[in-house]
Image 1 (tube, rainbow, N blue to C red):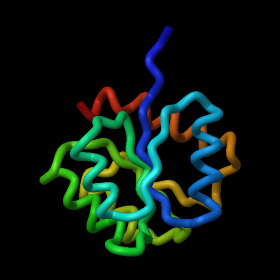
Image 2 (cartoon, rainbow, N blue to C red):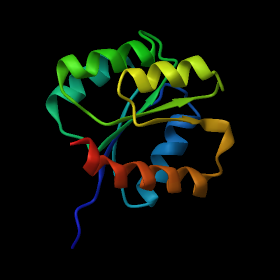
Image 3 (cartoon, helix red, strand yellow):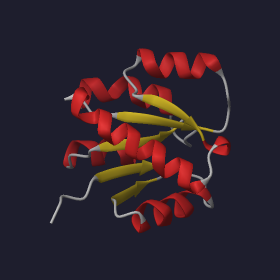
Image 4 (cartoon, rainbow, N blue to C red):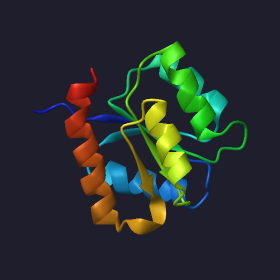
Length: 127
């Protein structure tokens, strides 16, 4: 039996969070869900994740600020999730070490899962 990838989904939206959680769980991933930056920091220190899906807009801290903290806490592969197609956000995310940036509205559920699989395949290069 192959190991299931462990994902941390950081999404505070009350509709998208459960939707992504369900979609990723049905695809066979083990998913932990956090809604705030503070929850996420605690979780990243407690558990090792294969990939973190990090929303840009969180209630207590921006995803970009949290991303910049991750490398002081523990190196973790991150893909930023956003609704805004802003080149400066993507550029900043890559500067802070993100593997990439997904604009939520641009992907169907199957395309979203394909992108997650792509990023997980590249994680071996991260470590």
